[in-house]
Image 1 (cartoon, rainbow, N blue to C red):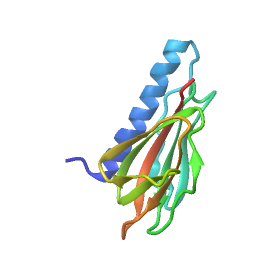
Image 2: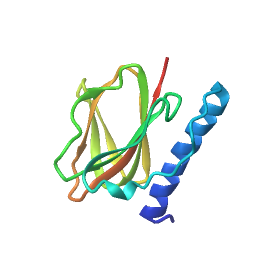
Image 3: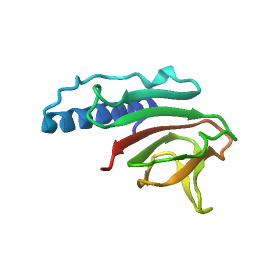
Image 4: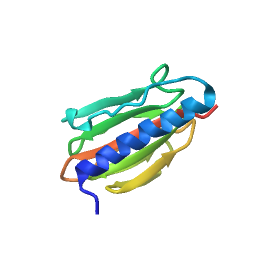
Length: 135
C-alpha cells in the first residue's frame, strides 16, 4: 500500500505527464515539472493553471477542515476528476443528490454540473482536482 506522501507525488507526476502527452499531440510544448503538494496546509494550491503551462488542463490540491466546503460552482464546459488522498466528505449536486468522497477513490463530474465538495468527516479532507476542457 502506498503512503500518503508517495500517493501525492504519484498524482502530481501523473497530472504533469498527462499534460505533457496532450501537449506533444497538439504541437504546443509545455514543460514537464514536479509540484510539491505539501505547501498547502489549508485551502487550495494550484498545481497547473492551463495555457501556456498546459494545453487545457487545470489542477489543484485542496485541503478542507471538518465542516468546510469549497463552495457551489459549475464545471461549465469542463469535465472534472477528483482524486481523494485523505479524509471523507460528500460531493453535493444542485438536484440534491450526492456522492460519497473517501480516501483512495476518484470521482468524475461531467460538464455543465453545479456541485460542491464538503468535508463531513472528523479529520482533514485532502484531494487533487483535475479539470480539462470538454469542447
